[in-house]
Image 1 (cartoon, rainbow, N blue to C red):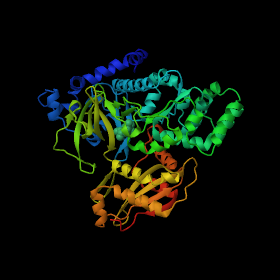
Image 2: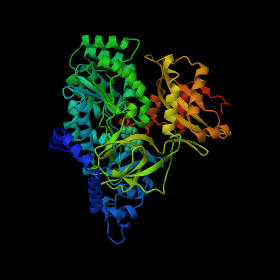
Image 3: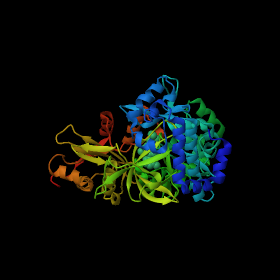
Image 4: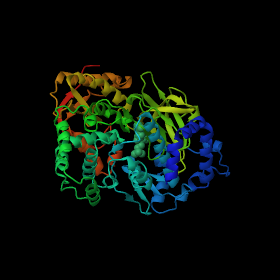
Length: 584
Ligand code: AMP
């Protein structure tokens, strides 16, 4: 694990480390691959591809196939069932990471070694350092970071499996590092009951409101949920502050104990000022009103999280949104070197020492839609990607993944020294699909962003959305779910059918040529928009959390695959609209 000394080294010398890494991309990448092969070429998995025993960087690229999780799953399953991990990698697996992606309904298990954890840690620390450098005085205050864990799973081999965040929050590195700057006591973060945890974390955040200079979490979706929780519980939180008592439904011993150290006396003045702020009709800027010294909001807001940008801009009163890092259970990829970039301009600079990266070129047609990866094109190295081009990232790690397709499409937007910077475009496997039309996450998000513009002058906010392809009817149609609310209030807005139909039309208009031609030819029927009431998407999150997804890593699906999930959103429906039948 990263020792205090290593953490100190990064904070003291981090900017030089960054310069060194980004100036020597090709050399470092070659060294990383050499090291991976030196250690792992003799494993059962890799040795098959080197029949003459010669495993150099060049033969790696010619012999080892590009794979997906399903190709490596038999090896992972064998390890999870008790075989030695040396069939896949030389170093000891300390545990598996659970990815939010699934394979055949099961969560993906990704091996993690002590070393691969350290690599991720150093990226997290570097990203933290870069962000702090951007905001003067950010070393002085505290962070109100809402962090949650999920129970671990034990595989038959005895190896544990958990979400990365769960593992990380339990380490000494976290306890002795970032946790020291957090308002939330570690025991409230480690509480397995997310509701008690949230209540206590918000309570401690409010008790220390004058010290908080950062508000954040892992993903924007967690902050959206936090704001909703605050809407539901601010009265009870104020009552706790006023009386000095802790609500009696907080029964987790860790939470109770931690709170008894910090929540020690009645504080009616503080309760009054919070009450006054929360009683205000408009909650615009509520985050800065409650925590007036906040300098920025810190969470991932790109990709599927971009749907929360306007919500966070509204409640954050315009303070900067910082999207720090792009990583996954498989590997850490890059960090945001320009924390002040606007959410839709955020790019991540890849650091060449974390893994060996290759990039499969992804075609884009005239309308900017990602096509199938050109499989006849060779993947290119990190140092050879081209500005403006789209790629799917392929990763080879020290922890047993060899030429593994992560499933994310990225666009090269620039370079920092010699290291490419990428914008996250979409997760490849998230598509709405009817007939031969494939609508990607990016298409959907762009179309909805356009359509929601006509609601904004009416004071109506789109807080979150999802979709599914309804093929129960012929021809099938795409169905959108929108959660709408009035700015600053939670009431369901009065919905003007004409305007809502116009939204449907704008969405369809924005889809690509293939969609429109199918729609015109009658292979796809008119798009349907179902408006759901405020809070319905929280129920969806509860559903996924109950299925084992971690709150801290939850990403609202932009496209639903489960009937149960559709049922949940349907149950909150307050209106249903269609685009004009004859629009094409
Ligand atoms: P998980 O393995 O469950 O942590 O999920 C990793 C996936 O989350 C990545 O492959 C991306 O699709 C997505 N992701 C992680 N970080 C970002 C980011 N900064 N922007 C957009 N998507 C991200």
